[in-house]
Length: 267
Image (cartoon, rainbow, N blue to C red; front, side, top):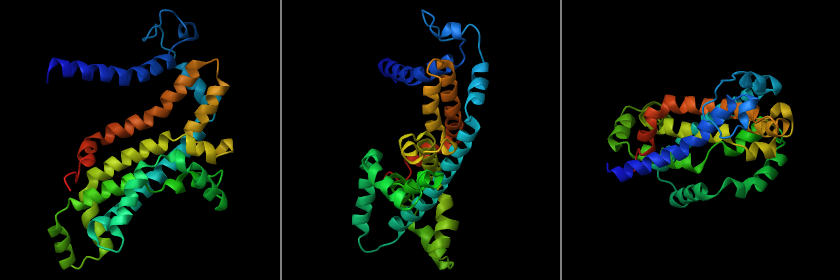
């Protein structure tokens, strides 16, 4: 690797990490250091009380529970439904298969903001507004998940499927017992994408949820910003707490991430 490439990578890394480091620094500062000039990245005195203060000032525990319910449900449904649809696209031949797959690809390109209004109208008709079910159900499966799983299943040699069918495996058993375990890296990648998207989602829960007891973490933090408009230390501490689960999940599953992301890329 040339020196120029290393320099570019270093600059990109600093640009990516700097906002988080500054957020972490703000969450650990005392009131007297918050607006000190020149600003200091490393506080002279670390104030852990900011985290306890924000946790006790707003119902952070309830926000975490609601967000965990939404995220775990979203990850489970997306893995299950995307793997089923991907298996069907990869291993079966049926009428309108190609147009349907093109529709899946097109769905990846449509921003969520474009379909917010029709989705909300649908949620209202189903009487799911102001509920965690209304947050999860419209995005229980997505086009990216179907595409990734289709590519992963298509990369599995046909001989594996033929051997399982000779042994009398039904299509569902072939999917669950034979094919699905062979796509673990892709499942891990999809789980990470879904987890990050569901945990950090703000716009859709903001539209659907009206009662404070149903707020997810991101919606609750947005209202916290208004509550503590003059206390940036609490705002920063709450933001850091909301990021920790994402960082933990990514670190635990990162060894599968790259393999899963490029699984089946040649098919």
